[in-house]
Image (cartoon, rainbow, N blue to C red; front, side, top):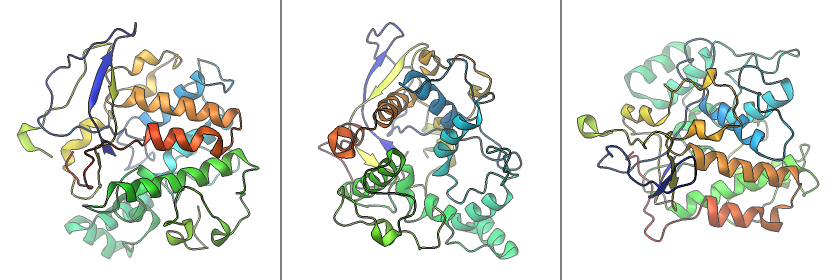
Length: 322
């Protein structure tokens, strides 16, 4: 998603510990996996989903510490689906089931749209043999103009302020819609939605009205000492998805067996996973704003703009170098 400087590490007792294990000799960024469907796309652990539940437990939202990815009730699964949505805006990783809001699909259609958009020999073949166009909402969110859904840039060398403006536009719309009574509601047309975060970008520029809402052998994973939570500074670069080395997967934490974890109220479980504690902390703050129905203009926008998405003085244009 983004890269920034590692400010410090924190032990479980909040003691500062900045001595990491071997570091990669190139920019490091935080990225987390989703589980995906139950078929060919189920290759990862539900990291995003588990982070969402942990953040809700630690927030003002009333929820048992024993709630996990596996036992979460339907109401909580709605939050979890929201954390998956930017990877699956077409809702292709789920089956439509009136009795089960978290019934995973086999992921075949998602896979077709993703591969077709990625291009190359495999993508071209998949698109040709299945008749899948490249410009789908799945493809656009991973390789095109909707990458801001991932807090990523649309293309190489995109100006960081441009990327940030699109991210803030989306955050404002989603926050106001979820809280309610803030000028945006579910029955509005796209051309009726206006936002204060950006004068250049409007939602209708990205969606049609009928749209349902590397480093080779020298790249080493950055690891913190056991029990240490990493803390990161301001954004130095927004990344693009296209062009990344497949070796970036070790930052997805897809091999950490979070699906089997219990007691997600213990946030120290996430220590040592790059970027995860910062991400959870931000989600806790946002969940509390939402719980208290704080107006966007009463601190939410400022916090997101100046803290979560603060740009470093030496921020650079977008690239794929992770």
